[in-house]
Image (cartoon, rainbow, N blue to C red; front, side):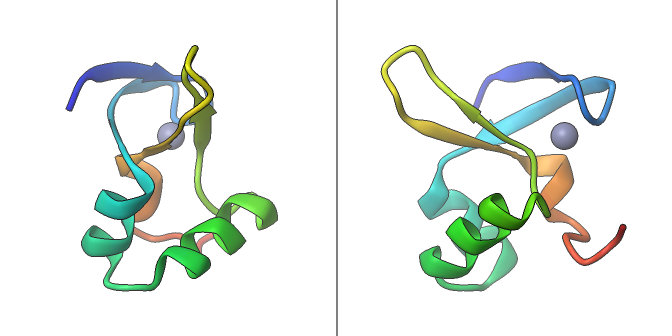
Length: 64
Ligand SMILES: [Zn+2]
Protein backbone atom coordinates (compact mmCIF):
# COMPACT_ATOMS: atom_id res chain seq x y z
CA UNK A 1 0.00 0.00 0.00
CA UNK A 2 1.23 3.42 -0.93
CA UNK A 3 0.73 6.68 0.93
CA UNK A 4 -1.37 9.16 -1.00
CA UNK A 5 -2.72 12.63 -0.34
CA UNK A 6 -6.51 12.36 -0.24
CA UNK A 7 -8.08 15.65 -1.33
CA UNK A 8 -11.26 14.83 0.56
CA UNK A 9 -9.57 13.81 3.82
CA UNK A 10 -6.97 16.56 3.32
CA UNK A 11 -4.30 14.26 4.73
CA UNK A 12 -2.03 11.39 3.77
CA UNK A 13 -3.97 8.14 3.53
CA UNK A 14 -3.42 4.64 2.28
CA UNK A 15 -5.12 3.53 -0.90
CA UNK A 16 -6.42 -0.02 -1.16
CA UNK A 17 -7.89 -2.07 -3.98
CA UNK A 18 -11.58 -2.97 -4.23
CA UNK A 19 -10.78 -6.47 -2.92
CA UNK A 20 -8.79 -5.11 0.02
CA UNK A 21 -11.56 -2.60 0.74
CA UNK A 22 -14.20 -5.32 0.83
CA UNK A 23 -12.04 -7.37 3.23
CA UNK A 24 -11.36 -4.38 5.47
CA UNK A 25 -15.02 -3.41 5.67
CA UNK A 26 -16.28 -7.00 5.63
CA UNK A 27 -18.75 -6.28 2.87
CA UNK A 28 -19.06 -7.55 -0.68
CA UNK A 29 -17.23 -5.99 -3.58
CA UNK A 30 -20.64 -4.95 -4.93
CA UNK A 31 -21.23 -2.91 -1.77
CA UNK A 32 -17.89 -1.17 -2.26
CA UNK A 33 -18.92 -0.23 -5.80
CA UNK A 34 -22.22 1.07 -4.42
CA UNK A 35 -20.37 3.17 -1.85
CA UNK A 36 -18.22 4.63 -4.63
CA UNK A 37 -21.31 5.46 -6.69
CA UNK A 38 -22.98 7.04 -3.67
CA UNK A 39 -19.85 8.97 -2.74
CA UNK A 40 -19.60 7.25 0.65
CA UNK A 41 -15.95 6.38 0.13
CA UNK A 42 -13.15 8.29 -1.55
CA UNK A 43 -12.20 6.59 -4.81
CA UNK A 44 -9.35 7.43 -7.17
CA UNK A 45 -8.43 6.04 -10.54
CA UNK A 46 -4.85 5.05 -11.22
CA UNK A 47 -3.12 5.90 -14.47
CA UNK A 48 -3.82 2.33 -15.53
CA UNK A 49 -7.56 2.79 -14.96
CA UNK A 50 -7.75 0.78 -11.73
CA UNK A 51 -9.83 2.05 -8.85
CA UNK A 52 -8.19 2.63 -5.49
CA UNK A 53 -10.10 3.40 -2.32
CA UNK A 54 -9.01 5.78 0.42
CA UNK A 55 -8.60 3.46 3.43
CA UNK A 56 -9.42 6.30 5.79
CA UNK A 57 -12.87 6.78 4.22
CA UNK A 58 -13.65 3.08 4.75
CA UNK A 59 -13.63 3.30 8.52
CA UNK A 60 -17.05 4.87 8.83
CA UNK A 61 -18.61 5.01 5.37
CA UNK A 62 -22.05 5.78 6.79
CA UNK A 63 -20.99 9.14 8.21
CA UNK A 64 -22.09 12.31 6.37
ZN1 LIG B 1 -10.09 10.13 1.89
